[in-house]
Image (cartoon, rainbow, N blue to C red; front, side, top):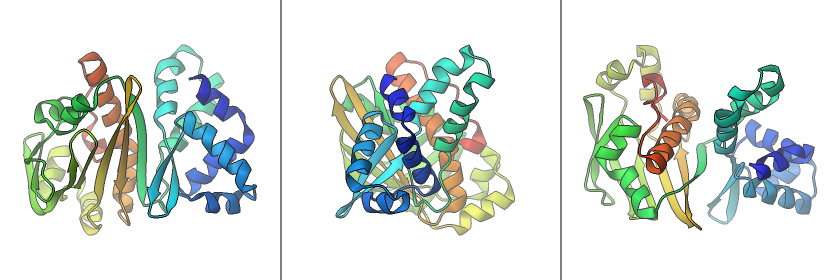
Length: 268
């Protein structure tokens, strides 16, 4: 946690976080232009923020895009906020909320966490129904081969559609698939209103990718949910994924998941 506090102590780095919170997924050039800072200074500050896991960089073609990562703030809040009075941690709580909120003009939600496990075990945690059911409340029916159709089952409600497919499957390294179709049966099961369901159903289908990388004795997991123009789903992402991935991490490290996320927040 020392790296996180060090990173947050510098006002220039906080400005970078503010800029990404206002518009996530910016390139180095865009950050320099928007903050009127020298390229070398921005690069150095970004390196500190990345080392603290507060910013995640994802390559898109020739550019490297930078995204806020809420995981370190979640960890600080979960471990220590309850031990101090509200007034002394109000600023930290506000930052936590800001980092968990995906800006409406961002086309992706990116979340990076480090888990004390192995790539093989993490892959199992992402694909094995016995695992996904425990920390997510969702299980998949598929052979996990690129191009294969997926059936989602959540609280007994099954969702099937030809558009629900595995996009990439490189065991222990990368997994990607399209998000499920929003049906009336699903909405009724998880408690989503007809109004929200109509908004979700009108949006383009999104996709999610999981990058698995060894990191010493840990494994780095980066989740990128590309929502495109799916603004209603984007708001759900900021609430759902942190809870789901925290529960996955806890399950893999302790053998016990966190309580299952509430139905209206499961659409990470």
